[in-house]
Each structure stands twice: as C-alpha cells, then as structure tokens.
Image 1 (tube, rainbow, N blue to C red):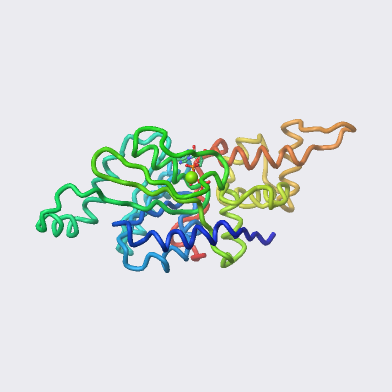
Image 2: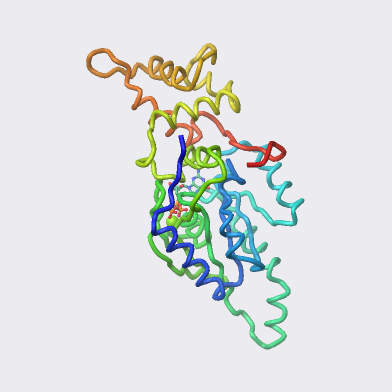
Length: 286
Ligand SMILES: Nc1nc2c(ncn2[C@@H]2O[C@H](COP(=O)(O)OP(=O)(O)OP(=O)(O)O)[C@@H](O)[C@H]2O)c(=O)[nH]1
Ligand SMILES: [Mg+2]
C-alpha cells in the first residue's frame, strides 16, 4: 500500500511558510507524539534553517506515557527542546510560553536594551495535517480563535491570532512532503489520521493497522476485541475476527469488513484500544 498525498494546496502552504518566516521570531513545529519521527516534515527543517524552533509532541494523551518521556529525552539529547502536550485538555499553557521566552531570551534582552519593551513575540505554528495546530492555538488563547476538526485539511489559509500576554500566533494549513521515505512513514501517518481517508482503501489500511498492533500492543488488541489469540496469517484475517466478534453482518449473512475497518481505525485514533505509540526511540530510524 503506497500512500502519497501532496495536493497543490500543500505546495502552496510550503511556500507560505517560507514567505512568512522573516515575520516571525520562532517556529513551533507540532509532531504527533505517537509517531514523532514519521510526523516530522523534512521540508520544515530545510525551510526554517536557523530560525529558533520549539517542538510540541502533541496528542501525548493518546500515546504511551513511558514512550513519551523517552522521546522527550531523545530530542533533548539532540539539543532540541520538545514539550509533551495535550491541546484539548492541558492546563500547562504557561510551560509553553515560558519555554518560548527562554528560547528567545537573548533576542528579548537585545530588544529591551534598544528600548523596545514588550514587543509581541510572533510564532508560526506548523505541522502535518490534523496534528492539532489550530487546537494548540485555541488552548494557548483560552478561546476558540481558530477552526479545528477531526479530519485533515480543516485550516485552509493563514490566520494571525493575538494572545493576551504578548504573543501573536500564525496558524497555517497542514503540510506533508512530496514523497515519503518508505511505506512505513505513510502508513503511520495514515493510522493517526494525517492523510485524507478518501485516498486510501479503508480495509487494507485497517488490516495493516491490525498487523502493527499485533506487534506493538498485542494485549490491548486482544482485550479490546475479545480475541483469545492473535494467531492470524495476516491483518485481513484479524479484521475478519473483529467483524465476527462485533457481529458486523450485511444482508445475506456476509461479514461487513468495511464497518469493522472503520471501527478499528476510529478506535485506534481515539485511543480506545489503548495509549499506543507507533514508534519508539532506539528502533531502526525511519
Ligand atoms: N486527544 C487529543 N486530541 C487532539 C489534540 N490536539 C488536537 N486534537 C484533536 O485532533 C483533531 C484535529 O485538530 P486540529 O486542531 O483541527 O488540527 P490541525 O493540525 O489544525 O489540522 P488541519 O488544519 O486540518 O491541518 C481535532 O479533533 C482535535 O480535537 C490533543 O492534544 N489530544
Ligand atoms: Mg488547523
């Protein structure tokens, strides 16, 4: 299953990020905590160059806690600042704003010396589709300032949002890159909901997810779908077992694979199967 999704509007967003870079003090790059490497857009690195950067490992509430901490350490060892965050529930907004001030402290000091006090700090929020950029902004703003939604491609253009406390945030549409390095990257992005579902075969995607979960979270998978064993030849057999257990039957007595596939994807994305990270530091890097 070879997934590629780079429509014209993403090429446009890539240009938009480059064009607005000189207007901002720092770039906040949101990664999906369940797959931080697969969700890191290599183009952002190239476009942003030496601009100060903060990584937010978002949706950390959906990922495995120990793996979250291992990722934070991994980035710290590379000299990168990464904050674990939950843009829906977090009360830790101050950690983000304090960290930004800390990363920009030299610049703030220079400006103060030149008499420019309380100049707003401008941050550009970037990341893959559906990773939670608009929700992150709303969380920081303490109000619904940007439209968010549970599918990729909700934000269509740029939007500046002013926060009380001296910050201005630039929301941008989600952006991927023209070609994924390997199949696993595309799959992990699709599992988390960063790829438009319409361009993929739902049943094949769910079968691939079941194969992944069989390796990464066998006990959670067995418990959720009441499967006594995971002794399947492949993901399609596992999908069949899920359909059977849930009693998904279409007229004529056939199993409803499509419905089972939708349920499996949905329940993974909302962490009903468990708090599962799709990659851990130290594995063969993708
Ligand atoms: N559980 C959880 N859900 C989140 C978090 N952040 C965002 N979401 C949900 O993820 C979905 C996408 O959020 P958005 O803020 O629209 O994401 P976006 O990155 O702006 O998406 P695009 O504009 O489409 O690129 C929404 O259903 C949010 O409620 C998080 O930290 N935890
Ligand atoms: Mg958005």
